[in-house]
Image (cartoon, rainbow, N blue to C red; front, side):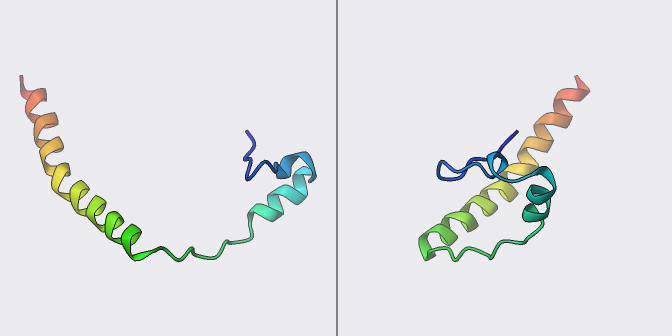
Length: 64
């Protein structure tokens, strides 16, 4: 499996040893806009609110 970024596939150019060492280099954190951060927090809250409901339905369906 190869990862293609902007039409560039590093696996086509680098040897396997070079590719594995290049993948060990950490990437910098991306700065997100205020709107995207807000959407991420809304998604987190939604997941935290939906999780108990999903667990309740799952376990109640196991009872019968």
